[in-house]
Image (cartoon, rainbow, N blue to C red):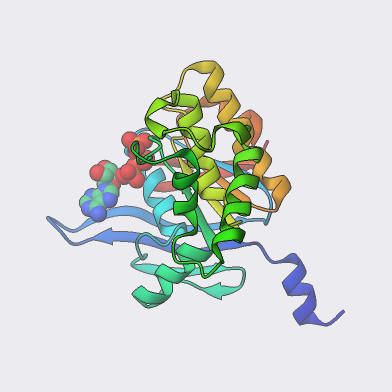
Length: 235
Ligand SMILES: Nc1ncnc2c1ncn2[C@@H]1O[C@H](COP(=O)(O)OP(=O)(O)OP(=O)(O)O)[C@@H](O)[C@H]1O
């Protein structure tokens, strides 16, 4: 095997080297101290730590929702830090599926129409889109609810739809920020399990969470305290 091939096989999907964030306004503030972090492809990891520690900030840098003020961020070997706004938007649209604390569905639309929002910008034919949406809904266990108006769903069902919307384009990365915070215990577990199972589809899953149960579902846990990654471990 050539060196290049070995690199391609073994390199992490997400590779951060000295990635940090300092904001200038209203006063210069260090939000994230330089972080080195590798996340392997098709694994699930949790980012944990106290409130205000910098978990969401780290996730937003990995999801390219904002740019670091220093360091190198390689996604599958490609440098993301320093990409133009248009290329970042392309990267997010193609490679990242976002799941948030609240499901952010459009209540007036059907379940399947909400899932289809995950394909906005794709050039797929309507029939292919419908097939992908149906497959995503089946995967999250809602195959029979496609036509239902989203306003009539339970909290757990809404989250499943949000996960289907994130997964429908088969992104390589899924970023879930506090996905269980608004759910009861049992439903929270189901959602954690569903997200962790996305690794079987080849997705890499990052869970930002306060939920101590999340560690049971992931391959590694990374802890942030006061804007510093204090070490990670495989669970
Ligand atoms: N753009 C910004 N400008 C100023 N302060 C910021 C900015 N982004 C984040 N912060 C601050 O940085 C700190 C870390 O925020 P972050 O949302 O990453 O924490 P967190 O660990 O996700 O917290 P929580 O668990 O409460 O959601 C907070 O004090 C937040 O107010």
